[in-house]
Length: 106
Image 1 (cartoon, rainbow, N blue to C red):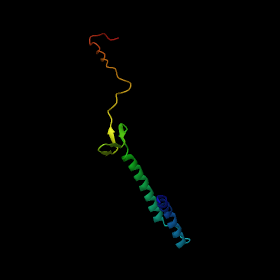
Image 2 (spheres, rainbow, N blue to C red):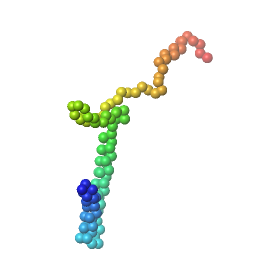
Image 3 (cartoon, rainbow, N blue to C red):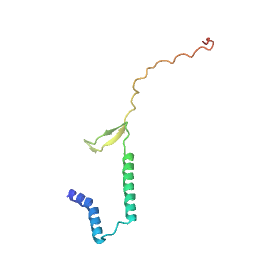
């Protein structure tokens, strides 16, 4: 049944266009219809990009999947992880001493 609804939703614009062509033979599609279609296409692409960027997960976060406990189902969630140590490890070496002010210059 869900496939039937999806097929109807997919095919309905084509069917409506075929009906329009049958009722208006030899008449071109108006420029306002093309402009509205392009605006709708731009809005849908922009909305998809915005949604994809706004729903992104922090790369340093870990996803904890849902689990069943004695008290019920704990939903899945994102938990921040601890910052990792820098790589390669930085050695704790003291800074070199500053040059002496009275040393001769070469």
